[in-house]
Image 1 (spheres, one colour):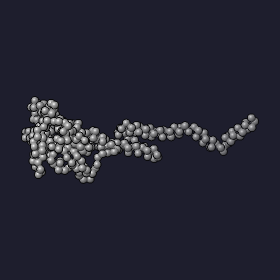
Image 2 (spheres, one colour):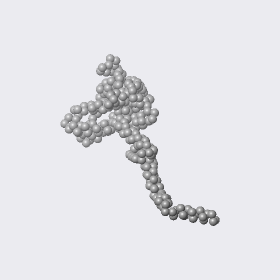
Image 3 (cartoon, one colour):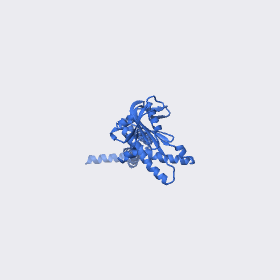
Image 4 (cartoon, helix red, strand yellow):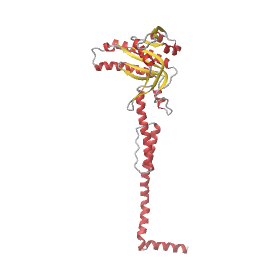
Length: 314
């Protein structure tokens, strides 16, 4: 006990020594300021961590609107930059999805954007069914209408048609003035592409009949489509330049489909023998037109006119 008291007195003497006052004050100041410094350092680390957690949670939810910015010049900043790169990738992916959905069905877009993407950027041979559709007498029907009224009329019809096309998972290849081109079986293979195309064509004609009845009752002009379908081997792929690419299909079978469409009358659906055979399980009532010459081709093609009104009744 005496020894401990002696040591304590010696320490007190050291602390009260005039030469040790600066050291003593420094120790005292550090003791007093350490909680404040600790809180500041904790806040400096905690805030970036909270921002990172918020970014990760947004990424998990699939929310591409979050923005994580950390300027700490350490590993936290590197981690935040990596996270922001992932968020930017999600944002670009969503923009791509929105662009693709304008041409493809949602299920086809999902397959294209999957990690194991099934779309070949180069050309490839595929068996598909091509559908061409064109409004008959559009120019004469719209005489006397303003350009804006004519465009609005087309858009009203096209809005319904495109909805039906996407319902049957067709690929809207392109608009052709007052017509359009649709592909079934590419870019994603469909074993029943001919059946899908034929059902889609019949559905479109049915929808337009309903629309035309309403427009006629309202005193507006009504339009009718001529539709042609053909199945065969085509080359599918990206066509264009490095600045602008377009997915499409080309080949003689595409040209045949276009020629078939040109022979279809208002409200008619004409299909080639190849397409009709592939869709044979549908057992649709049809009228055989026999071997029919197609402009630009030496060999005629057997065509069928589908009785779509009877098909819907069946």
